[in-house]
Image (cartoon, rainbow, N blue to C red; front, top):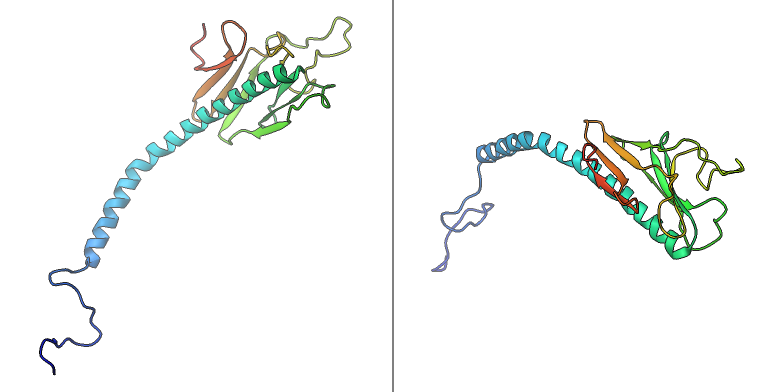
Length: 190
């Protein structure tokens, strides 16, 4: 054997002096602590994510209303935001008869399963003076119609209510000056 070399048994890893790994008992204790913390935090996180779903959906509906308003003004055509309550869906499209005019894209969205939408209709069954049309509103579902000047049609619903299974709710309602829509809590009416 040469001087300066140490004998070590074959098959054992070489560690620095004084260093070792974790024992199985230490790993189990850490895993139990993590599991305990996770079980305490999980219910609070679930309610946080549910609240985020309601808020996020309200923001998406409001964004769609802003998009429809800006497209109506930019393209000078009426634009309709429709609500299909049976399918829990909503979307935007040009008003009937204006499909080939302008660049308004048809968009559709589906509500999160824990949410439902209620549309508060101000006046039921508005029709023209000759009783031959519904003023550009779809006959089979509630809708908000934006006129070519970008303002909501007076026949459009004044508010929508998004409700969550756990009882939370947000309202998307006409602003006090009736020129657009905003998000509010249902009890905060002017």
